[in-house]
Length: 153
Image 1: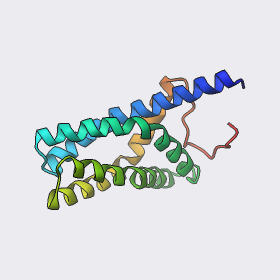
Image 2: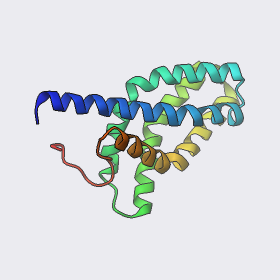
Image 3: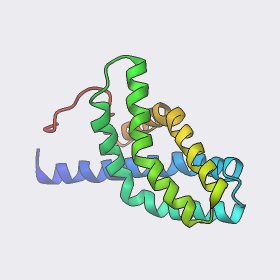
């Protein structure tokens, strides 16, 4: 594979993973911040703006993290669910906690927001993984995380 082809695939992977993260988690973030954490609409807007900016540099690293975590999954639904949810929770919850704290969530609201996000990550891990794979497909990329992968592929 040529360097240009590799770079093109790498760019497409970056754009696909970042777009998937922004689309999916802007929506779920709004729901959590407004209705679970009890943040004002102004705080939600602030959190989503910060979140959007932070998702740009972490979209692809998360996609790579998820692919690595999913390489441990077996073919069973339970295993896929466990590893997808673990990947999402371990990577995104600490980032999310910082975002809503910086956006004005404090005390009980901050705790509810982080716990709500953790619960959402457990529930949304596999749906987000499927959404990420769908976006990757639209970009002509392999799904990733579906089976153990070689570093050379």
